[in-house]
Each structure stands twice: as C-alpha cells, then as structure tokens.
Length: 377
Ligand SMILES: Nc1ncnc2c1ncn2[C@@H]1O[C@H](COP(=O)(O)OP(=O)(O)OP(=O)(O)O)[C@@H](O)[C@H]1O
Ligand SMILES: [Mg+2]
View 1 (tube, protein in one colour):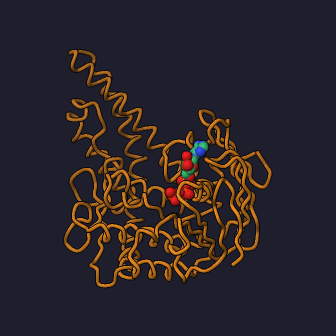
View 2 (cartoon, helix red, strand yellow):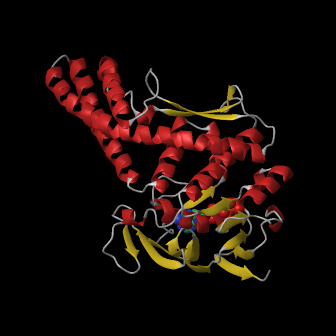
View 3 (spheres, protein in one colour):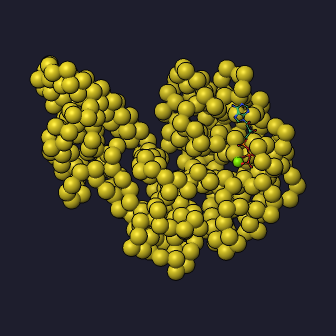
C-alpha cells in the first residue's frame, strides 16, 4: 500500500500543507526544526491513532489552534480510501472514511499500516520494559486491529483492580473493613486473568514469529555481529503458557499467590503489564551491555522484522525512516538502504541531502519555513 497524499490543517507547525506522494522513495530534506518529522508523524498517526513522540494529542495541535485535521488518501490494491481525522484535545476525536462520518476513529485502524524508524527507537533496547511492551502491543494491533479492544479492556480492568487494592491497603492500615473488599477483588481477578491471558498469549506468539526475522535482519545489518535472542519473560515464576486457557489459569494462580503482597502494596503485581521482552545479543542482555552502534542495529532489526512480518500478512506497510541514516556508519547506512529500497513506499527525512543514501533515489521535497516544496530530481 502507499499514501497518495497528505494534507494537514493546524497540525504541529503547519497551518496548512498539501503533499502529493508517489509510490517508491520520497525524501524530505531541510534544516533542523523545519517540520520534517511533523509530516511523517502525521502519517504515523493515521496508522496508529497515536504519535511516536508524545503520549497525548495536545502537542499535535498547532499553537493557538483549536483542533488539527489530518487527511490522507491510502491506495491499496489500486483502490483509494480517504481517511480524515479531526484531533480534538480534551474531547473525542472524529473520523471520516471516504467522506462518511458514520464511523469511529477506531475504525481507521488497519486501513494504513506503517513501520516507523526513528531516533526514539533506541529506547526499545536501552529503555524501560514499558517501551518493549508497547512495541509488542503496537505491532499486535497493526496485525489485528481488534486487539486494540483487548488492550483497552485490560487497561481498564487493571485500573479498577488497582483502585480496589489501594482502598483495601488503606483499610488494612487503618485496621478495618478488609473482608468485603477482598470478595470483590476475586471478581476482578477473573476479569484481569481473562483479558490478561489473551494479551499474553498473543504476545508470546508474536515474539516467536519475530525471533527468526530479527536474527536475520540483525545479521544483514551487522554481519557476524552476534546472535540475537528474544525472550518473553513473565512477571511470575513458571514456564510460559502455550495457550490462552493455560495463560488464564496461570495468571489466576499467580494472582492468588501474590494476594498478600498486592493488598499490602495496593498494586497489581502480576500480569502482562509487568512482563518483559528480553533482548539478548550473544550471551548478554543488550540493555546495559550492547554498544551504542549494536543497540542501534538491534532497534533497526526490530523494526525491519516488524516490516517483514506485516508484509507477510499481506498489505505491505509504508516504511518511514525519520532521521535514522545520520546515526549510522557508512556500512550500516548502505545496508539499511538496500534492505528498504524495494518497499512499495519509503518516506525518508534527513537534515542534509548527503544523509540520504544513494540507493534511495526518488522524489525530493525541501522542507523549510512551513512550506514543503517538490524539487526536480
Ligand atoms: N503544536 C505545535 N505548534 C506549533 N509549532 C510546533 C508544534 N509542535 C511542534 N512545533 C514546532 O515544529 C518544529 C519541529 O518540527 P520537526 O520536529 O518536524 O522538525 P524536523 O524538521 O524534523 O527537525 P530535525 O531535523 O531537528 O529532526 C519545532 O520548531 C517546534 O517548535
Ligand atoms: Mg526530525
């Protein structure tokens, strides 16, 4: 698939901009702070309904404006779908698909698939477990949009269960009323185990599917650079479940076991929100041991593997490479360029033209002073 045009109103630094796009490679080049990332961030938003840079929508609205509008035409198998998103901070966002507004923003998920590489990806390797959980969950949602609902259910149940535990912990400290709270807790254990087990089982499957693809991508980027191993680690002791049912039983048992501690601390201590995706390079964990360059290659390999996986499902994703080439040495830069050059659509941003590898020749836009101008190639 590819994006045939992007049009923004009051999104980030843009009052208004129209960018016609073709399949193949398109590079956006311009000095720092001119709005290159803002463009690709908007495309990523249509794919995921979120930004890769910020957790909330507010920064996406142009300073002084009330709402932002992102419009794209998405071409898949020769058919174009128009998607319009109105981003309203503090109020519900609105969506239109092919000019019909009888849809929810959620219905937009799955229409556009992207894999976005960005400097922030280093956190996949060096950052907290939450970064890696988010990576898995976002990829799950890209593959099966209905899992967005499973994620939301789990988050909601977790929040309510935590609130209950907090009250129980407070009641215990003040010395009364804990019995009643604990019986309600059991009902929430069931809800948490059900939603949590589904998420866990899908994540474990995903990690197994990613493993060979990450190993292959890493070897291509850094030949002889070591073996990558992905390990899903549960937040409690025991072997990983092989089915959703098994995951549910295990989680229920783990909740029973953690009960005392959870009530004492007023917090849910087991479940997919505390699981970890372990990344190893050779015998060592990548986090805390891998070099800067190795960490970068690992992060790129995770994104390349995501691309391969989504492509294998049908519906080749649009590749977005935001400012990544400047971070790499010449050899890795060329290898990455070769690996992505054949994709249906590749969008690249760079501060200077020299940072766009030769293998990625194609359309060029200059980005400066709020304008995006097509350059003759
Ligand atoms: N909500 C907003 N309203 C107005 N301006 C904004 C908003 N959000 C970001 N900006 C501006 O957009 C600019 C950043 O744009 P962007 O991140 O796209 O730059 P860039 O071209 O990718 O730069 P670099 O090469 O440094 O990555 C900043 O000058 C910032 O002040
Ligand atoms: Mg940028």
